[in-house]
Image (tube, rainbow, N blue to C red; front, top):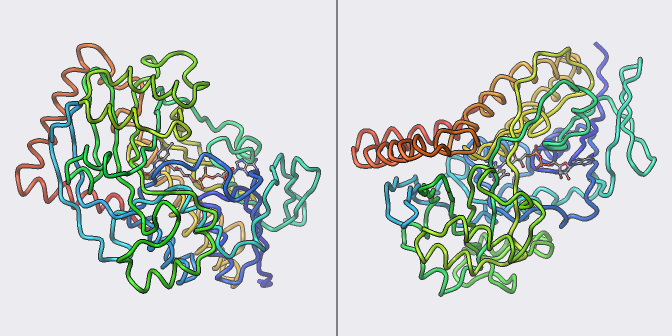
Length: 449
Ligand SMILES: Cc1cc2nc3c(=O)[nH]c(=O)nc-3n(C[C@H](O)[C@H](O)[C@H](O)COP(=O)(O)OP(=O)(O)OC[C@H]3O[C@@H](n4cnc5c(N)ncnc54)[C@H](O)[C@@H]3O)c2cc1C
């Protein structure tokens, strides 16, 4: 078999696309990434992403070692508790999480914007901004050409769709694939973390992932995001010397406007929102969140009313249908482009990273001539499709991200809420069940191939 290392075209400089690009470059495989955003700071990058062992492992395998250390140094303080709260801020349950001593086997909180800056580090010669992909052509000689809105083209041996939920590559390659509205809407807000806002939260909530199960089918999730830099972007006193050395020289911090904050996301079935909610922004949107949470504890409402209006964002939650098998070729997909999932289990980005790592390994085998490029793609897809759509299914059925969930129905909703609270209460209080809950949490978030 003739060995000619492939040239890979990646559409989309998001979580999965950039991780793949790093992994390929490290392996000496030629790669170019095309991103529609005009600059490295554009896009809806405001909220927190939870990266579990699956995601961190992929980052460790793909990123240059020093950049992986920067990723670790730029994570927010790791959550130590998984809390379940009522709308009145009573603790239904609190599960202690594992200490964050291991670089990979830890649950980490990352700001979306910061992760993007980490992933863009050192990729100036690989990522082209302001290049909106429009269509591709596959040629008889096995190459593939991507066309862009600016009239330009790029030709390579493999085209990877890493262009997210509304993937233009998928629309052409798998036109029968179905992305659908899951029927829920989130309002994401960020509240500056100050002495005043911190004082509104008990210690376990300050140090935890807190899921709020409210009555009337209104849910929330709250994360306190504390970084190693202060509001002026200067490193805080007490940061370890190693991290100071890493971060002081990291150019990404100059592009990153992320500061200590409280991420508070409120969601419910779309029926509970005003019809024009997706057009609302700023104070008007925060007002919608406050109306939805009228019976919530005054401290939670106090936080919402202190949210930065510029951070408030409505998100219509999407999911996807399993795609019947297709014949593998010189076009493939990863992440949300193929298996968009609701945020119900917080694994969309983790799964995109897992895809990137798996595809990287397969492409290395093709590059050294152990298999053909199309066989490598086929082997990647044979593994990715089953686990990807399994995550789609379990994400939809958790945390009320499906607008048709029983919890949004008048009578069943009340029973479902009582059932969920009862489950968490008992599980957190019986040592054997509590241990199993935490073990399952890490097993699920640590899946690997
Ligand atoms: C509210 C919310 C909370 C979430 N929380 C978590 C969490 O805690 N943990 C977790 O694992 N996941 C979480 N997710 C899911 C996660 O954000 C996504 O699954 C993940 O970002 C998908 O990565 P990706 O690389 O596939 O796509 P993206 O990161 O969306 O990247 C796609 C890129 O492609 C670009 N692009 C799109 N079209 C084109 C085009 N035509 N030409 C060129 N470029 C294009 C986009 O601009 C973008 O940069 C959450 C999602 C939501 C909505």
